[in-house]
Amino acid sequence: MHFCLTGQYTPQALNSMMDNPTTNRYEAAKKLIEAAGGKLISMYSTPADGPGVMVIFDVPDPGAAPAICGVVVASGALHNAKLIRLLTQDEVMHVRQKASQLRGAYKPPSK
Image (cartoon, rainbow, N blue to C red):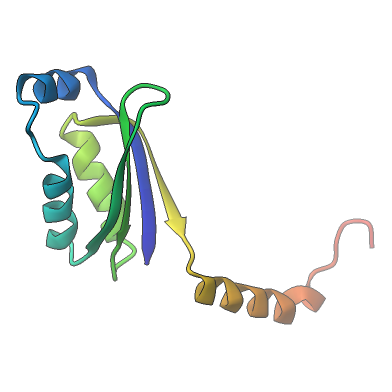
C-alpha cells in the first residue's frame, strides 16, 4: 500500500540540520521504512509553508504507515504531519467496480 507523508521540519530539526549540513535525511527515512517492511519510493524537500518534506513509500501492512508517521513526529523532527493513502490505478479500477456494484443499494434523501 502506498502512502504519502508530508510535514514541516521543527525548529529543533532545522537547527540540527544547519549544525550538520551533510546529514542524510533520505537514508534516515529509508532505514525507518525498511524496518517496517516497506520501501521508500521517493522523497522531496518542500520549501512552501516552511521547510518541509514529502515522502512516498510502500508498506505491505497498512498499520505500518501511521506507526512510521508517529515515530517521526514523536522524535521532534516534524510537525503539521499529514499521512495520505495513495491508490494505484489498479486499486482505483477495483474501487470503481465495487461502487458500480453498490450503486443500487443506496437511496439518496430526495428519493
